Amino acid sequence: MDGDLISVWGETDGSSTSGTFTLNSDAFTNTPTEIAIPKGFKAKIWAIEISGEACDVSIEISKDAGDTWKKVKTFKLASAGELTIEKKSRPLVVISETPYAAGTTGTLLKFTWSQTTAAKTYLNALIEIIKDE
Amino acid sequence: MVSGVMDKLGLVNEGKYLATILPAKESFLLFQVLARKNKGFERIDYGPLPIQVAGYDDGVVPATTVVPSATTGWKIAAYKAVAGDRVVGLEEIKAEVAGDIFYYTDENTLFHYILDIKPRVLKHIVMYPDRQPQTAFREQTALPTADFGVFNGQFETVVLPKIHVSYQTYNPTNLDLRTYMTIYYAQYNVKVVKDEGKAREVLRKGLAKIVTLPYNVTHEQVEKVLREKYENALFSVELLEEARW
Image 1 (cartoon, chains in turn orange, brown):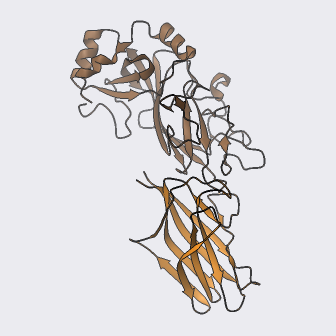
Image 2 (cartoon, rainbow over the protein chains, first blue to last red):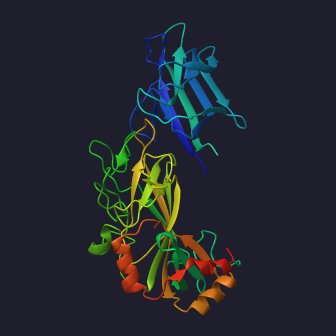
Image 3 (cartoon, chains in turn cyan, orange):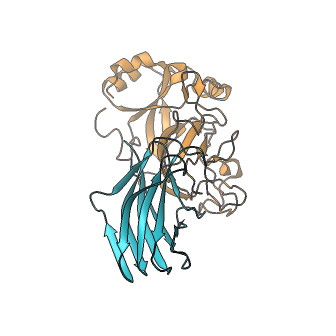
């Protein structure tokens, strides 16, 4: 079965040196700060674009509905400009073994930022959510 | 099954046969396709699912929500709750089928379709007929929230006359998901095969595509159709022993 390719985007708030991206997409209408991976599915992160001011962008996952988070990868935009990372053959994969129930169970994925000086930085990520077959 | 029975979409070609198994009856119906009224034009770009949840855009399935509700199903309607005309070109469809475009009453017709619903993370159950869930693990009926008895993405079935088929959908994510459905269908003119000898020959020669209907729980509406439309046309599945699948 083919997966669902979802393009998400967000931006730093320009006033905090760290935080979690609020995500927008044309595939969904709310603006979550995290994405719940349904049980039996996996998320593949195929591409990330970071643009704007210097910023570290991290991918973090939670296996307990957001109680605890683990940083699995950090991308560094060392100075103002643009950074594009494409994982053409080996995407970062997050597998979900539990159903999502807000605040109770579920595998979550989020993008966080860290900056020396608070400034505007923009994130765009291409995520595939696909059945774990 | 020999080549040429169906096309690349899985729809049956003219002159060939379609066997529809009714598991609850341990029987099947056998149809010969005399014509495909939409040959070459099988695709309907249906658009968002025909659901409307208050406070959300048309066709959006809110996070962790069953739509349209825990007790009702959505049918493949010509109209949409809000936009009114989103299946463009079907604005003038007859009122009696506007709420379910694959509903019909004539036993010489048969609709065979494949739904392709995106995003594929959505979970669906089929109700055949409307409001009768048909999948279960042992005696436990599957709800759209269940880890069994649901489908994601594609679903193929055949609609018998005078039957409304409906669906329930569950969004297992925290995202309020937009939806899109594409339908691949065939509208057949059919002849019902009632002669057992003919049925055996068709099956032995591999001239039939076999589709199992989601009919595991008997329902009076379907039973009535079988009595009124297909008298003496039900064959035991034992005949399929000779079938070339």
